[in-house]
Amino acid sequence: MADSGKAEIVDLSHVIEHGMVTFGDLPGPHICDYWTREASAEKYDDGSSFQIGRIDMVANTGTYLDSPFHRYAEGTDLARLPLESLADLPGVVVRRPFADGLATDAEHFAGLDVRGRAVLVATGWDRHWRTEAYKHDHPYLTAAAAEWLAGQGAALVGIDSYNIDRTELRARPVHTILLGAEIPICEHMTNLAALPDVGFRLSAVPPKIAGMGTFAVRAFAVLGRAAQG
View 1 (tube, rainbow, N blue to C red):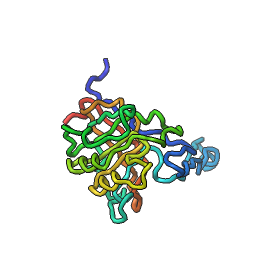
View 2 (view 1 turned 180 degrees about the horizontal axis):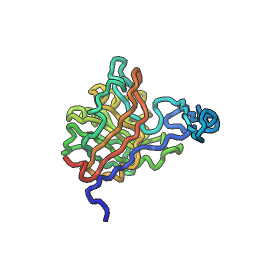
View 3 (view 1 turned 135 degrees about the vertical axis):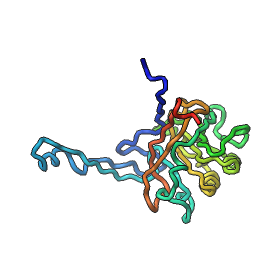
């Protein structure tokens, strides 16, 4: 009999693969062996062999998290983000199918308690991941939505779209407002449709890197008994 008390874990991140392009004209990652199994086998007498990989990639690759340093020179970088702002956060999903409109405005959060919560905007745009359509006419948040979320004390804001801002414009008000309020942003999320509206806990933790404002994360949500409270 299955353990009914076991928590369910939902993966919310895209796979990072060699050469894939995530954003604009930023280069895709170069993934290769630094130490091959064949070369390492020569160092051991018991048949052991190991692979040590090497990756060269820009920080904005795959599903990634922005810290305030991404937008502000004096902002908090990845190394100084408190784990409490990234891990085991109670979450809430706002469902805004892109077919109903690309802009998510303040009115779409009305009545929600977002204080101290990870707010995830599920648009379904991730179905276009790694296609030309993904980066054009994508869903986004408005400045008014960002102001509302910051004012209501959201802990983290995520979206399953190409950017949380409208990239057709030469301005980034949502990044400016949220990161200015010390609210991390997680972009290029996926599988948000698998989450309930509430009753889960989100983690989206990047490596502890000094002097960088953005990096890829393995974002996931925990559902079930362990998610309560």
